[in-house]
Length: 295
View (cartoon, rainbow, N blue to C red):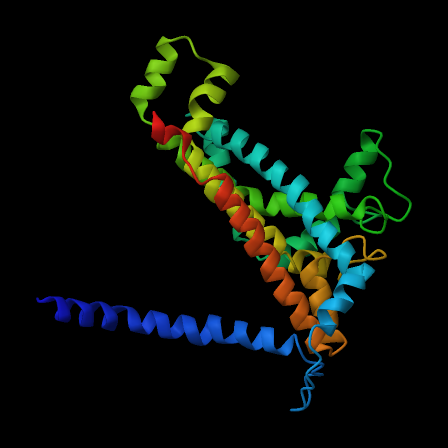
């Protein structure tokens, strides 16, 4: 096949995928950006151009600022918890004992359950009267807040974050377990012969060799947290109490769907995308060089 024929073949092979991506991803994205510059109410064809007015409102909107802060709070504390628990559990499932076998059979179950079901399940667990978390805490001397975990101004966001970690961590256990499996056995044996064990072996051998897995895990956590919605929407009815659990997409839902302000809603969606892309670019810069590639 000559060069012209190869080019035609590649174009024909990629064209359907590119067309689908353009229709279902690029075009809706362009439409969202255009709508964010209008005051469109969603029920008419009239779209008055308002320029950057929707974005200026967001900057001055305390509820939106709170939503961004809550997204970042879940990202820092929830993301850190996911990484630590995921690594510990990934080590735990490597063994051949009964506990390791039970963990391997069950750790991914929360992640395959519908997020709406997870939200309802945890709402029951936090129920002030009969919730297992509530009852279990009181049995060991931990008294729940008067308004319940999901009704308390200080406890609501940590409670939602804990539910999110429980739901998401299974995927990262699988990811880290695969990374541990890919470490060459001769390196592990050499580390054992050199006397490296416990935390020393983890920091000197295991952690550096999992650079590519860490890159994928951190990037995916950022995308997942910034796009969190259903859990908050169901557990706290869209950010209650007093917006203490409000996140960007629950505020987007409120503005766009409940209040019919599609222009402002589109502006929130665009800033949500910009934030995700910005953090992802920062991560790509941080992880731009594999330290193990120089060895």
